[in-house]
Image: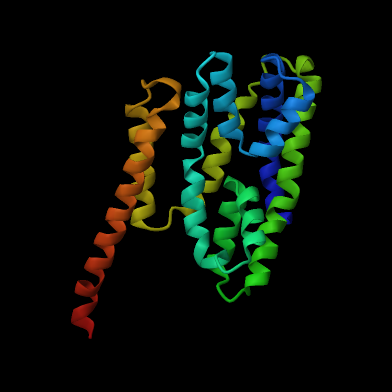
Length: 230
């Protein structure tokens, strides 16, 4: 829980901003609370809210929100070696609490301390979520309630890029990580002209394929480099 506290500096403004935007879009407090409680994914919530405001079709709203959250499927796959042996009920809890911050903190902790037991790993994961997730919901309600008092000059949307930079930068430890991040940035910029954030649908698989390709190539080259020393 303590290690997740620095993320509050960016999560809370982001949540307040969502509350403000949702309130301005016409959602009442009950709907905003339900939205945050059920979805629990800021980027996806913003995407859905924007499309709702644009009167997009329900299919496009759902597909776009799922596309933005596609990264959570990759997070889940990465956590399987560490938490995959938990019970179905525990895995359901992990799936619900899986957000960018809980994933980033947990994976780094698991990799640095592989001797942790399954129970300790699950406790650490839940501990990272114990502070962030409830406060996310509460902060969205604060934004919805007091949003009109926040000056327009407060550019709270800065929280999004700062959050992702803080999470991603320490994790770029291998050539595969760096290549995937580089391709994701370039592809996102190249396909930014696509509507409703659909460029992410193109950039995400390209980045994943690049990372996987570099990882495979690295594994193939490793024996060739180590062979002369045998």
